[in-house]
Amino acid sequence: MEIDRRALLKRAGLLAGTGALAGLTGCEPDRDPRPAASGWAAVRARFDLDPNRRHFAAFVLASHPHPVADAIQRHRAGLQADPDGYLEAHGRRLDRAARAAAADYLGGDPDGLAFTRSTTDGLGLLYGGLRLRPGQEVLTTKHDFYATHEALRLRAERTGATVRRVALYDDPAGVSVDGLVAAARRGIGPRTRVLALTWVHSGTGVKLPLREITVAVGGLNRDRDPRDRVLVCVDAVHALGVEAADAPDLGCDFLVAGCHKWLFGPRGTGLVWGRDAAWDQVTGTVPSFDRRAIGAWIGGRTPDLPGAALFEPGGFHAFEHRWALAEAFAFHREIGKAPVAERTRTLATRLKDGLAAIPTVRLVTPRAPELSAGIVCLDVGDLRSDDAAAALRRQGVLASVTPYATPHLRLGPSIVTSEADVDAAVQAIHTLA
Image 1 (cartoon, rainbow, N blue to C red):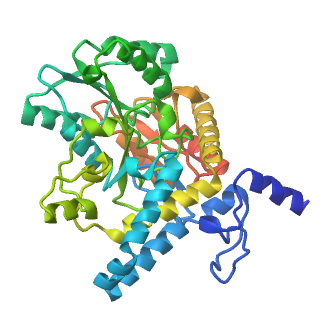
Image 2 (tube, one colour; image 1 turned 180 degrees about the vertical axis):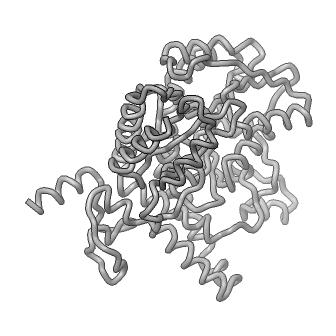
Image 3 (cartoon, rainbow, N blue to C red; image 1 turned 60 degrees about the vertical axis):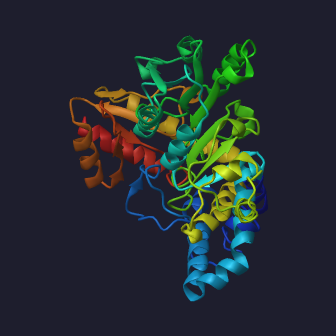
């Protein structure tokens, strides 16, 4: 029976013999003396989270799993002992490894992505650097987060660019795929050059049917001059580490995300992925530290590099965190993108089903898995959202409040939560109702 169980778990991607999850079942006690576990309990055991708390706010700022924490410490020790020597001996190799791991996870080419410090960094650089001609506009939605709206406001203030916002829905719990696609399609006008979207809305938990929207935009683009085609740019921070789709299959032109939320990657890391042709439509803002760019400068030449290489901000970074991205992506790859996505959906559905049975709870997030991801937003009677979050914290349930004009209580089941955690959260919320 043990052999059959282990074989089943291995096929599901929950046991790994080598790499980021090595030692998960206790087969390498010398490397990791912590207690052995199996299945999702083994994944949870790779985090040093307080076991007396139910962690439903990991998507705000996540804990590092052991492989990531160990890599950060290893690189930090090397830099502390000999910063110049460690950087010179290992920097290029470690950067390539992190880039290759990110590209493997996203399903793209390493030359098509640029590292940043956060989602906000990436959005600011992208929207600040997109090439727009006079008369063209950026279309965004009323549901996007501050970082998108502020990046576009600053762009408009600097350049006079036109930015327009549209609503995709009134009632988030009642959205449909067709309704969201139609609303996005209606918002696009003849002057629209950029469609700025957020894949999973952090204020409502609505997950846009991104592929269906990009197909609709593609239909519009067939009748447009290439210089007027709509570029679809996506804030994917609450999808990276949750959704299993590869970036090239989504149909968007750019995808921006931080890596320190659902991916459980190093804090202060992020990325921008772009299609090859799309990178020609954006300029860099901060000088690149790509050696080819510096070499061109030394030689008095204009650099001729992939767009992502010139876009990626240079300077000296928190290298120990950036290099540990390799372990973060490997950690997820060894569990499996599909199992992680299914686990998140299953727990979120269990949470929504439990909350829906409480008469005084109003679910804000759609019940349908195809229209939601890991974020679950709700209201508890007439209780203020911040008071509800504080009351839950006193019961050991860590939730958050949406930072929008209309606040909601927000929980995010993930790979560090269990069925027991979900049931305990539902019971705790029931006591508030």
